[in-house]
Length: 191
Ligand SMILES: CC(C)(COP(=O)(O)OP(=O)(O)OC[C@H]1O[C@@H](n2cnc3c(N)ncnc32)[C@H](O)[C@@H]1OP(=O)(O)O)[C@@H](O)C(=O)NCCC(=O)NCCS
Image (cartoon, rainbow, N blue to C red; front, top):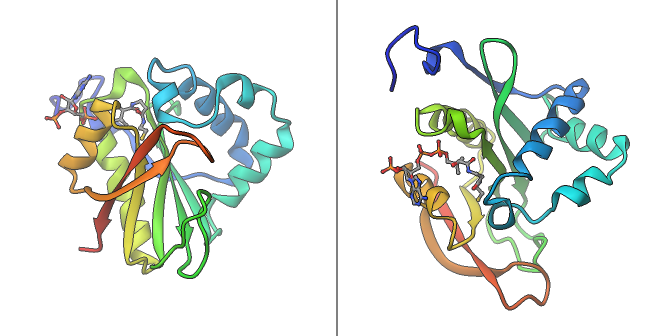
């Protein structure tokens, strides 16, 4: 962690939920994330896919994960000048439903998606603050566990998830329906 007052001190950053009207900022940060060198490992969507989406898509997605929604919540890190430097979204998956890959959901759980922190703000503890807030929200709404899906070649993300306690469940998930390439499920049990 850097010293107090330095430009990367985490004390000058705020982690908070998004508000529905903030969809332009949510869109802008997502478009930055999709241009990351590891975007092809980190996200299922491409930059071109995202650019082609109408405003209504961003409005609905942000509203559905904003304060007041019980199905999902997007958290962002806001810098001293109000800039968004990172984001994570927790989706709530209900027991008895089927997930996007066609697998049954056996326990009520959180599913962390859209994990991104701008490169200049990585490695200083901000990502942990972001996860602290997102995971606390998940525990507060009584999910039994939180999971995420990570590509085995995304070394930095894997190392971060392991450091904060996520463990491999042993489940591999096809990258897309019918794909031969798969990703790994990591799970964090309720403390
Ligand atoms: C994934 C991400 C949010 C992690 O946040 P971060 O601030 O970079 O994480 P940290 O620096 O705290 O931790 C990463 C760890 O990996 C290590 N690391 C750095 N580069 C690495 C690399 N190329 N390969 C493997 N490990 C690496 C770091 O030293 C650190 O190790 P430590 O736990 O021993 O300290 C961020 O890197 C990011 O936004 N990446 C691009 C998007 C992405 O991959 N999202 C995840 C999709 S599943």
